[in-house]
Image (cartoon, rainbow, N blue to C red; front, side, top):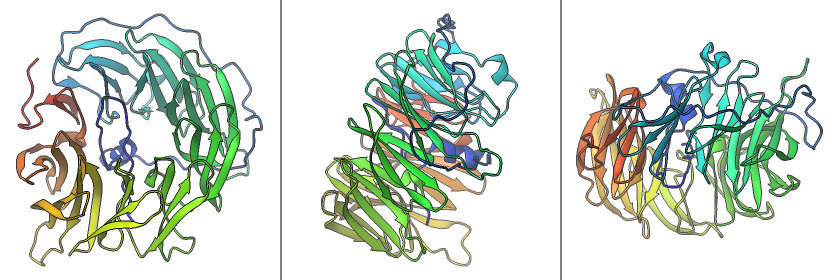
Amino acid sequence: MNLGLQPVEHRDLLPVQGLSRRRLLSSVLALVPAALAAGCTGDAEDGRGGDDPFRLPTPSRSVGQHAAGWPVRVKAGSSPPVLAGDTLYCAEYGGQIRAFDGITGREKWRVPPTDELAGLDDVVQDTPLVADGVVVVGRSSASPQASAVVALDADQGSELWSVSVSGGLNVVRQGRQVIYAENLPRKEGQFRSGSMIRAVDLETGEILWKNRSPSVSRLFADEAAVYAVYSGGEDHGVRALRLKDGQEVWRRPVAVTDPSAVRLADGVIVAAHSDPEGSAALVKALRASSGEVAWQHEYHTFTAAPVMDGEGRVLVSPDRTVQALDAQTGVRIWSYRSSNDTLYSLLEHDGVVICGEYEQPSPKAKATGIRINLLDSGKGKRKAFWEGDYTGAEILLAASGLAYVRLYVEEGMELACLDIGSGKQLWKSPAEGGAVLAAGHGALYVFGTELDRLNPRTGKRLDD
C-alpha cells in the first residue's frame, strides 16, 4: 500500500502536496531515516539531567540587505521554504537559516550554522513555522547535541531561545505554544525507549508541560489538544493530550501504516491503515474530542492518503475508485471508478478533485501512460483530463486554478503546469533537484537545486 504524505500547512502559503520534505530527501539524496524508538507512557522524567538546555538570547546575526535576487542559491537537500507576509523563510540543509524578500529575492538576514554544525554532513531542518513575529525551526542530526528546536525573531533573525533535543524530532505550533516530540536515548539492552513530548512558550521557550510517550512518529494539534501518532512494539495508535497541561485525554489503538496518512478537520481524525493481519485496508474516523470511533470502512486496497476537502468530506481512493465520504458519518456521497489498476496523488482545489491514474503499458512501451483527472467535487463526474507517457508522476500543488505535476522520465524529472478548468498543459520545464513548490503573491516559488520565482501561467522568471 503506497500512501501519500500530508502537506505542511502555513498561513499565506500553499505548499507541496503528496511528497514531504523527508520523503524528498530520501528519494533525491538516498538518506536512510533513523529507526523510530518506542517505550512506556506516563509523565516520568526522561533522565537526561545535565545543564539547562535553554540558552539566553544572542545578539542579532542579521546581515542586512544583500544584493542577490532570483534565483536564490540554496544548499541541496534543504526543506521547502515558507512564505509569510512578504518574506520567504528558508531553513537550509546543514543548519543555516535565511530570510528573503518574497518579491525581489534579496536576502534580509541569515543565521549561519554554528561551528559544531559546520563540521556535520547530516543536519536536516524542517520547513520553518512562522507566526506572531516568531520563526520556529526543528533541526535533526544523528550527532549528539546537534538536534534542536530554535526560535528566531522573524524581522531580525536574532535568537529568542533554543533547546537541545535527542533526535527524531516532530514540531508543531498551536496558539502561543510550540509542542515537540523527541526520541529519548535508548538504554542498554532495549531496542526502543520512547519519546518525550514537551510544550514550551512561543516567545520565551519556557517549558509549560511534558509527557512521556511511546515513540512518536507524528504530531498535530487543534485548539483543544495535541495529537500524537505513536508506536511501541505491537502497540500502535493515536493519543490526545490536553493542550493546557499535557494530560492524556484519550488513547485509541490504530495500526497506522503511514503516520502522514492521518488527517484532522472539523473535529474528526481520519486514519488510513492496515488491519493487524494485513488482509484489508481500513479507513477509520475518530472523534477528536473523545477518541470514539465515528465510522470505519474496510477495503481491499487503497493507494493515496485520505484528503479532507474543506467541505466536510473525506476523499479516499480504494479499490480502483475515488470516493467522497461525509466526514461525520462516513456515508458515501459519490464514487468515481478508474478503468486502470492504480490511482495516486489525490488532492482537492476550489471545487475540483485532482487525481492521477496509471495506464497499463504495452510490451513495447518505453514509459507508463498516465492520466490526470479533474473531477467535479460535488458529484465526482470527470470534467477534463490530461495524458502523457512517463515512468511516473506526482501531483504536487493546486493554486489559483492551476495544477502542477512532477513527471518522471529516464533522464530525470520535469514540471508541468495544467489549467484545472480545461486540463490543458500551459508549460513544462526540467525539474532539477526535485521541484518542491509554494505559491503566493501571484507567483510560483520553485525549490530544487535553487529557489526561483516564476509566473504561474507561463513558467518564466518574474522580474522584481
